[in-house]
Image 1 (tube, rainbow, N blue to C red):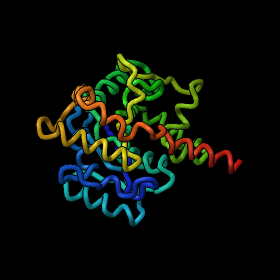
Image 2 (cartoon, one colour):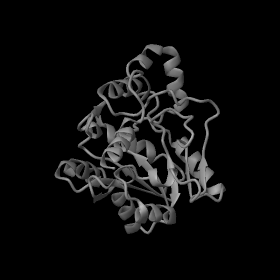
Image 3 (cartoon, rainbow, N blue to C red):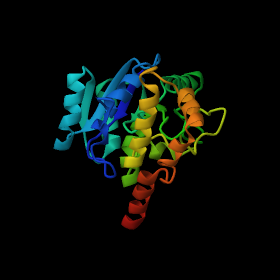
Image 4 (spheres, one colour):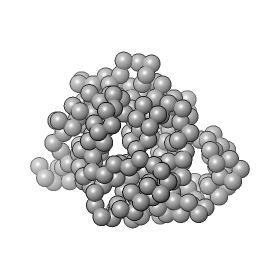
Length: 251
């Protein structure tokens, strides 16, 4: 199964976060190597933009023998669709480059949930129960194409699956749920404080086990609850909220 990881240099809130170093290695490269532990993913492609600022993302991929695709900067749905189409995908996994703590076991469990049901789309974020930053989405190429053909709002073009998740009457949507609700935990990277939190996790876990799990992180946080205070004040899903506000202003 094909996985597409969206990544760009020109993040509005933390520019260059994808290449910020963690223990001497770029954050994006850490995430890629964690994804590569997946047993269900057969091919991984980094989908970045054609903007000159993303030359550095392409160079990172080439230097590390990782497939890369370049497309539209702002219309991420088009970039994602064209990448999937070029690679003749039947089903596609969507991952985003701000999740350097992603757990490959959670990726695989979400994919298997999709495979075992007759779904058009499955994620572990429709009803959030995992920490923010463990996000996995799986969809059929037919579903992705429908979104690409019909999306008109900026929010639907910037946030690849928003058209799909807002149409429960049109698509058969599935949600993979964690046994405990951990959705209050913020493990994604949008702000400097997020990066500092992730850095603390890597400093404490990476040298012992470079494929540390979600459970390992939770155990660490039990020992060091002060780590939770680093970024707990940051609101979730600000990017989507900003896009929806812009849609309303345009209308």
